[in-house]
Length: 216
Picture 1 (cartoon, rainbow, N blue to C red):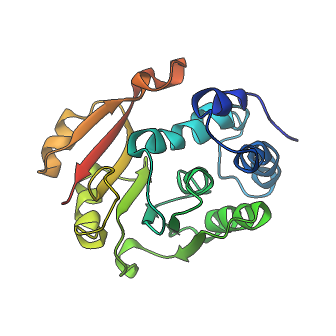
Picture 2: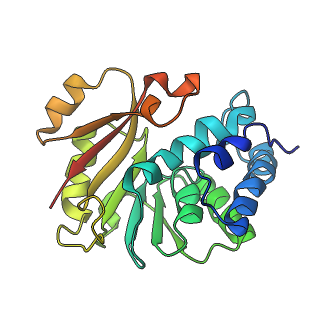
């Protein structure tokens, strides 16, 4: 069962994507429903909203970061079935991504989808964040844990002197929803909040935010 409902949103909000990138995004509408029948990584009732709630949501990070130079390395912490890492890897073919998750079966889905898409800029690691000893220009995440926990991990894994080519300074970029004031205060670091309704007009984004914590 394929679902291409909402694919037009990718073209609408990212008009500079080339034909190969658009084809990769189109194929997500086939691959995720197929894999989800075998290994549940997206709720059954949510899979029909794959493009707005998962793909486009992930790509809000690309809207925020803008153009990135070649060979920037990005860690997707708690990627699950590959969000936001796989959409970002399609959007940034010149960058390198490590998708990390402690649940092997979800990581298998992400790995198989990346393989079927022919993505060469993605690698995978099964395990806990404490087992990742590399440094990255950015750490990204999507609804993984409270901000204070993410900040502790980013403190260890973000390369503060990474050259981001004039884009946003190295740091943590995470996607959040709900009441965030107390969560941000508990993290103990300055944070920038972006309402995703500033980027996308769809109702789903009215309660969603992007939180950026710089580490430069």
